[in-house]
Image (cartoon, rainbow, N blue to C red; front, side, top):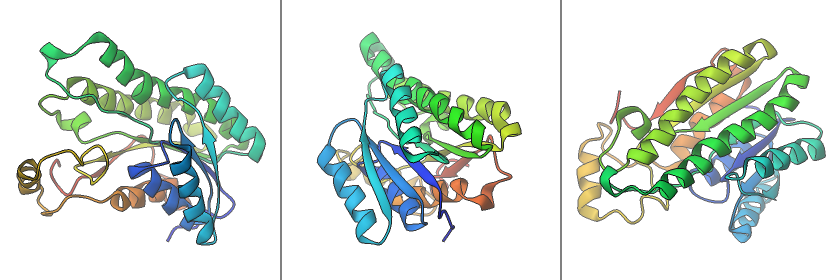
Length: 248
């Protein structure tokens, strides 16, 4: 287990799925975790309680990342309250699937507002504190479809691919301040987003995964925790693939 004692971490989209697993993994490693959420305060409190019940430290922060000003203000408020912000994991995201010919402009706008603009806004606010401390870890949750594409996910794939460009650019911008910026690209993971997929489709997907199984949120959380650790201090601008070999 990586030692994150003394570190303060904010995880957007931390109330469920991969975000929840990340919160719990960071908490288990000793970080004080702020569980960010837009809706579902009860779920966020349950995540914080799960961390504290195991001897960790956590609290919650509700804000909508799709509003850039509100997101920046919220992240700044968290940093001010804690007196530091060492880790930002931008996990908040939505998926709207559909073929290109059926894609509506408002759906595209909504996807980019949450998945891209929200992540950028949170990173911009976080780096202000990290620069003063001359230390920081930023991790964006992208997706395997942002690298390989997928039928019926033009907008979603575009938003997740955008995060890879953001990570690589910010890695260059902030390296001199000892701030690393990376992305994790999960493959097919058991979450609320994949729960509605039929069993036949799941079998087809698993057949394309060399490791022969669907990933778990904890698989992704382990990769994120590593990138947030001191052991990953010489890794920046990278996309760490957690996909069971379905895209290499």
